[in-house]
Length: 303
Image (tube, rainbow, N blue to C red; front, top):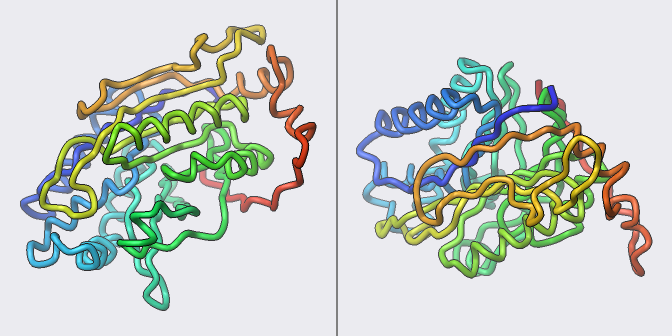
């Protein structure tokens, strides 16, 4: 399949009454997107932090909120896996902080396939808040997921602002970059959006951004959330079969509003643009002074 509908969430951080409230919320969101024909559902960075509200004793503490959310991840992932299988869709779950061996914390997004497969991508480069106040550490490797929809890669929020990460994914065959994001100012939102659009231009690929939105005053981690979901492509009129919009914006949500933003993606157009676009930045990348071969990217099959 090369043509499919993607749904990018503008996802609010809610104060949850109990676990059942979370199950009902996630199920409702997934069923709404599936009802609109979505085959790929993208949730944002740190959207899982709403689960910290299930423990009132620690939800206002940075370290405590990590422990609460990390402990719930097996149940969270089982729920996502069940929903992906039930509806025959791919779901990029909202990223979450998780404790790993030795007590370190990673910010991890998990991609669930219809057949029960699951892949994970750690955020690689930490923001100042993550490294200086929250003590979340970066991961070590980028992954490209070979799916029935095409080859997908995940660059979480700040990672999208670093071109060599996306370039490594493109060299490994990535056709769609997923950018879950969480930003507390419009400055942050625009940094990630500009980064996403630049990565679409350089990589001649689709980029899907999904942000958290709204306020959660009870959380010291995600108290304010600004942004809009967007689906971007390279601003290229070629090749045959139809080019992209002049500004590269395929779909864009209303900033701050909760809900889904939908777009149609045709991954066959990526190969066509890379072969015969108006410009060929993928092919011409190595002509930049200082361009060097990038390290290999891990490949995972998720069908």
